Image 1 (cartoon, rainbow, N blue to C red):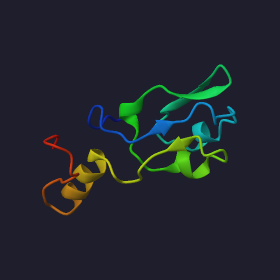
Image 2 (image 1 turned 30 degrees about the vertical axis):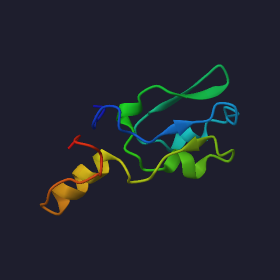
Image 3 (image 1 turned 135 degrees about the horizontal axis):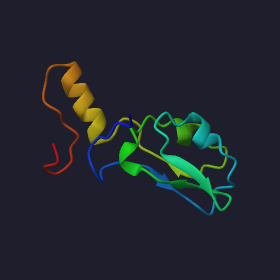
Image 4 (image 1 turned 180 degrees about the vertical axis):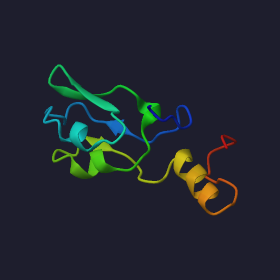
Length: 94
């Protein structure tokens, strides 16, 4: 089962001109957000990204960026764990 968070709020960004298609991002992504197509990594399921940062941390070419823990999913999880309200500083999404 593939988990989903909130639509269109993930900070994941790809710089396709820097990507060499090495595939490291695919190996470390726990959510199968990326695939290799035409010798480059491509985001195929942005809304499945949980913003863990494994792809960006392990990319030797700095082709991927993501604000780790910055997204709404992270805010919702923190809110649930702390029995509080989610707060991701987005405008009205939560």
